[in-house]
Length: 373
Ligand code: T4K
Image 1 (cartoon, rainbow, N blue to C red):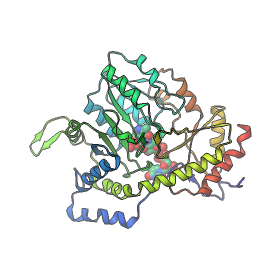
Image 2: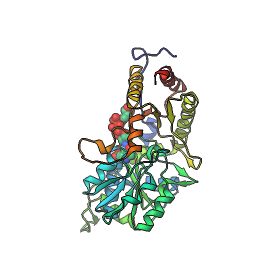
Image 3: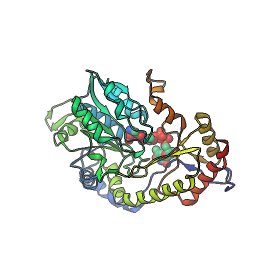
Image 4: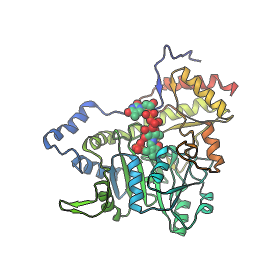
């Protein structure tokens, strides 16, 4: 045991943004003082879109203000209505986006293996009002993309992926950005790749390019023409410049994350009171999160959270409560696997600036209380 306590040890947050060299960012934004082209598809936004297309090996990337508006924009562009089948085990944004677009979310339980939507339970939820499936690659764990594609084809449904956590993740060598009709990414400060705030839609079908351009910029198609009722969801030049500084650093950051995850895995391997996140051999991970389940249940989980907090370790319960239990909704969904996971999950601190000593400090606290859990 390290003997650590909050009086003497620095606080360890659940995450911390990875920052580029300050001068590199300043050099990147300096020309903006001259050009004064600060937003509305400037040079950095266009360049970052191309750089991301190359990096993700996807035909099209459109940048947006943030991940949430990317979801709402995708719903508009795909013309979704009625009901959309989605997961309850996600961040508020996924469900909020549907409801804010007057769509009824229909909650499908998750699989207990990697916590993504249970494909075997989707078909029973399809009605004549269903227009799409909205799965989430939660923690960067990849959904059963082949089965979802087949199901969607059979029923004529759109597929919109929420890949907020999955930047750079590949399945059998194929980037997650290339699955479904549209895939949404979050480039929020807390994400593996960030543009301070930011988001993207990625896709293979060129016809979405113009539709997204209009949707994020008031439907404007020229100085004297407005062809659709779009909103405003444009990324600005300062965000894109941050992205251009961060993109060349991403492989090194993922490598650092990987080494930290390996340390957690080694230290916690014998903690029989925990279930660790399984990584699939087909998946090239981005090591975005380190979720563990405290098998015994919610009280034991909350107890572990409290003892971590006492030692200055600010883990989080991503995602508890389930969105179905939010006080702003009144959903009565039977989702036992999601409830099980949500009641037991803790996401431990993980970010590239962490040291092995910090991981050890966290594991010491967890293992010391282990027997009571
Ligand atoms: N879909 C899914 C599945 C998502 O997880 C998200 C976002 C979205 C959609 C929507 O994408 P965006 O519209 O956000 O692009 C955080 C993030 O704000 C949110 O982006 C993310 N998911 C979610 C999982 O985590 P909070 O409420 O937990 O953030 P907060 O402020 O408590 O910060 C968490 C930790 O990060 C703190 O310990 C402090 C640290 N932090 C945070 C910020 C903002 C920093 O060190 N610096 C910072 O600037 O939601």
